[in-house]
Length: 191
Length: 191
DNA sequence: GTTGAATGAATGAACATTCACTCTGAACGA
DNA sequence: TCGTTCAGAGTGAATGTTCATTCATTCAAC
Image (cartoon, each protein chain N blue to C red):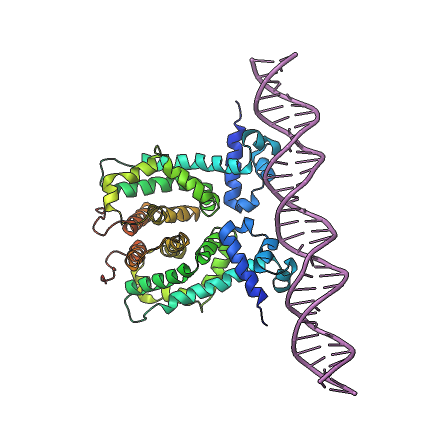
């Protein structure tokens, strides 16, 4: 396969949804952006819904992998959180479309189903890294999705804003999010 | 005027946008939900855009007022933040449509323009309360919209989740958000 | 020659907006 | 107390557009 048209369609959908929302991402516009005919998307995906889900799953898998890869398993929870947060941010900052697309999905009717699906996936490295016992013990006793919002929500909107931030600022924000979700007394040592 | 149809249309729009997103809130559906004819919305608003803006402004004004009213001006910054946060939350928790509608607007193309408009309004009690010198001094040196997201974003999504939380949990979250946006060493005394 | 990907015009549903019309009630002269 | 008038609120069918989806057909590879 010289050209992966299905991948081109997924990428085009993400770009248009990120820029104009689901409203502005019509199938004909997506096909045009991908450089294929309208019908081509339907060769690979039975409906717009399925295409959206596939585009989300692809991005989410890369996102999880990027975050998990940044973790040093031997470090204490606060440091692991910081590494995870910075790793996720680096992945999103590489291409602003990524964060903007994820934000659109989070605010859409697709969110509930896709989020549940992601949480159920035991092989998700992001979910696994938060499930570790020492992390759990340090977190505030709050519902899972509340913790997720406090920790990851600001990360998404920060990356979407495309504001250049240096490592010191990013670390400050990562630690701020950690302070928001963890019991006092679990701070990482500075540096 | 026995029945304020314009208000009914604004409320219907908020309900439908909250439940189904902008995509699912067609003008005919909004009119039906409001119990009026399709054309009636156009008697009061020149376009769907203008209706959305009006519905947003009405809600935002109430939200700001609710937050500002909860503040005791004599308290230290950390306590004032907690009061503001809890006041805003109480207003949103009264009707889950409020938070869900605000989230939809925040993720939409309307967000940028409406947010800028809100910030420019010098009479907004919410903006004024954050502009106080002692609050400014305690905040992390970060862009305004980043601070806003860290402080208010979790509040919105929390209220949208409709999870019952007691005062202790809410206070814990309010203080978590304050720790996320403030310099270490500005904690409120417990209680 | 067969198979499956790719095409893009065609289809019908849904949308925002318009408009010719009706209804309501306040104003006013008798 | 009536009857008339008028402005503007209210109506809902009609309009033109855009959308997701389909399908008869073409194309490329083996």
